[in-house]
Image 1 (cartoon, rainbow, N blue to C red):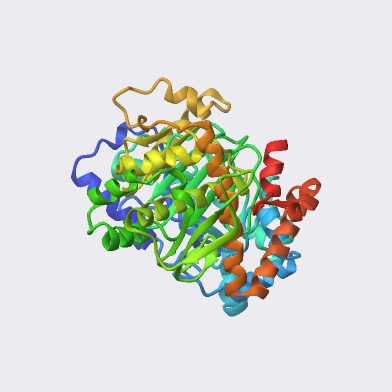
Image 2: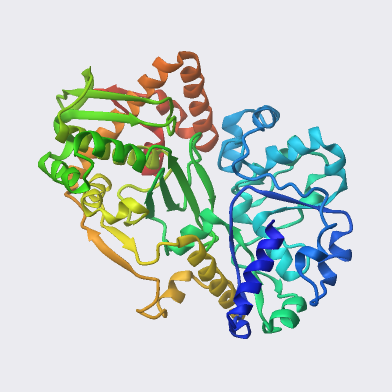
Length: 534
């Protein structure tokens, strides 16, 4: 399917007389975690000898050990995930080593499943590619390395060394490193475009292929997040938070991967499953299905919502892992802070205006709380907002107050393909100058009419309000823990132990503080302490 898709794209462009000869560099964005299994001999018998008179799909029919390509939607590898984590010393160690837990959609567990259930396919495999490196291989006509950013979604790479982890490889399948091949710096060039494309489509013979990467890394590049301290928030069906950081704190619920456009930094990513669908449900119930009315109600309420805090999980939430349910609290008054979890009262509902503020404020405060725990700065330098919700200035004004920074929107809605194009230009320039060139210096020369622009839509709130939202974030984390305890006390206790173990892995000097003081119901979070000290 991947091969035929490339055939069709190029054929359609050729029909439209696309000027292929003007292209000097190509990169691409691919869905993450998916894997392709090349058969023995595929490199010499197929890839290197592409015939320009035939389609790719016709020539590569027999190039694969299996035509199945496990992808990110596959969730059948729970057994393999548990086995890998156990072999590596537990979930906390895996997270500290690779940047995230071993998850069902990740490539490592998928490879282990093939080895366990279809050993003949595994042994017939000469090279395992991610979809990103597979597509680049088709263009180069040779096996192309997996880039650091996409490799972080495999449970196989040492996040800090940016090399394959021998322990992780051994926990997955035998002789795996020789099947994976080397790793590559994301901005490096994989090779020249194969003559097949020069002859068949009239590309330039000097056209270079820059390593492809995953859609999330490319989205980050497309949002032009060039400096540590930048945060992007996508307000969509699920809300996603990206942050650039020099010192990541891998968490049980987040993901950390190398920055695709800056080898000295990392990207932390958090996904909250309940986003716009939950906001829309409250809009329909309390604002007559009208965003205009929703915004009016939001504007009639004051920041902190008079101590009214809501948790709205229309779908099973991923961060924190809680089931469908709605929870509303009226917080008690604090002696040193505005509010406290002590004497908080659970109620069945709020008035309409409080409901509206509770869902938006609650979601944004949760984003801030978990972003800080994984090493994102607060306040950030700026937030770049994307997704359908970014068109609502009222939401962005509240977002600016919660995070304490200006909020911008990007002009190009398709950040992943734009990021791939930016990475192609970046890689080509780095190759031409024979060294790394900061992306920011390249973008400074870009046309003002280009897609590399943002619009300031919301100015930061006051420092006092930002501090108050920080106190509210700590309270929210504590109530989340209470909800976890109520749902499954044994699982919640195990989770606390895992978080302590992870802290010992990432910041041993802060481990003792993790169970530290609690005053006015505000949990002293050791991750935040570590971030401040560093």
